[in-house]
Image (cartoon, rainbow, N blue to C red; front, side, top):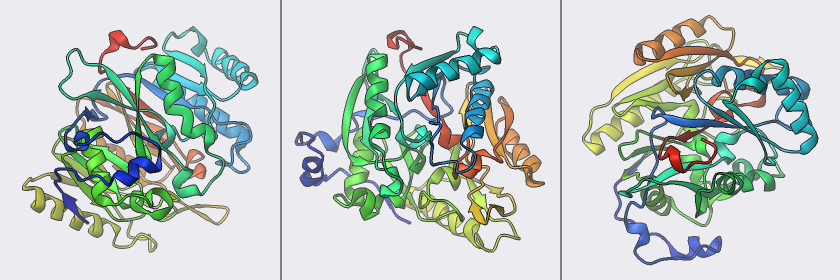
Length: 379
């Protein structure tokens, strides 16, 4: 685990690798700020799964129902924008929403925006605000995306989602010359970013190093401190996304995964994460409230280990949506999250079939923070 506070020394070659103009000195300062996820949202964005999705082998039809349940769960709290990949499916989704009465709700809007797979946390738009700008204006960061290091081609449509959403909203777009998946980072909104070391893999960012990425996090996300997390949850094909392992629950509270006593594959995971977080505290000179959250007992389906984690929760306005897995540990996890969020409703979401896609609620959602609602045409 490493923590660095950098003035920013970005390698010019990493900009040229993606055809992005290099402006000397621009990487030395904070230009944009990523709000904390618990800040007020204008909306939540989803990418509806294609009928031929590869994420849910044998459950392709059921995946459609899962996303309908996600819409129905989120819509009472905030508007939901759903990217639908093709016109024929658009009509099907519209009918399914109508059958549930969601067509009469002005909080759900459908958009024809193609995607390859439905994991918008990783391929979707990351909304930021310009640092110190007045009035505040939303900006969409267009990081590169390559399906977790090229694991699941094709990803061409996924990689275009941020730009297409920005065009739809009339937001400015800023191209960033590196691969980033939204599930690999978590911000406290106060300058500290938790980041997965998987982003440093050659298959993702072989053209840049840790210092380069930290400079980008500083410039584009407002992260003056980057805490690299080095761990992988058993069954996680992302190679260690932080939204399965460690999450900010406030500016000074960090929740971390505690391995289940019957889970040999994850043995020692909680101790490893705790050691990394304590080391980060010492380096930064801060004291966080560190809270363990026990994982469910090992889950498998058809011989495949599933990366079930309660840390894959998602903030909506006034609530926290928590994946549950039909396990005895579900109630305890919801209780911990309720204690940490006394002013929010904790909403369990049955993720027993969602996790077959190797993701859960946070992986399937992307927040649009309320930076300046008046300039967001679809807010």
